[in-house]
Image (cartoon, rainbow, N blue to C red):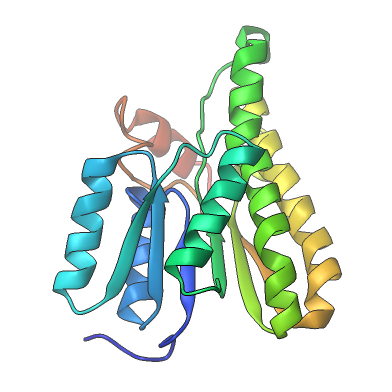
Length: 213
């Protein structure tokens, strides 16, 4: 059953066409928010919007490859327009997670991962948080990973981007929290999604076996 606790609020969810992002978009819509779902896959985006609307929710899709500052600012502008001039909730979920030893990381890999995982969230916050602070209300949730605190031999690149996001979360909470913007981070453990099991689920099972739960 759809609820109304977020009725009238506009929520941007990045990386919303699969996995954790998709589940988040569906739940926010179920709670009454107008969800702007962003992602690269038009077909999956269309299916998500159709599902939300069929269940009585409100949603729109914004196709974007969040690889740099320009794309982030364009998405912020598009979302603000679709949201009728405001964005109340930002979920920085989009990310890529290549695993491998440090010596095999190319400069191109490094720039791509940091572009999507760090630069895009940074400039989305830069574009959207000031208006939230001016209104005196807003919420930003950054999606991290347990790997930001726990080192593994194959996660130096990905883990470091999420450690950066956690540091930024603390800075943004200090910067915008006094003006009514709640800034938090969530760090899921190993989660079975389309992306994490694309090459089989052995990696997820191995990581899950290292956690207490």
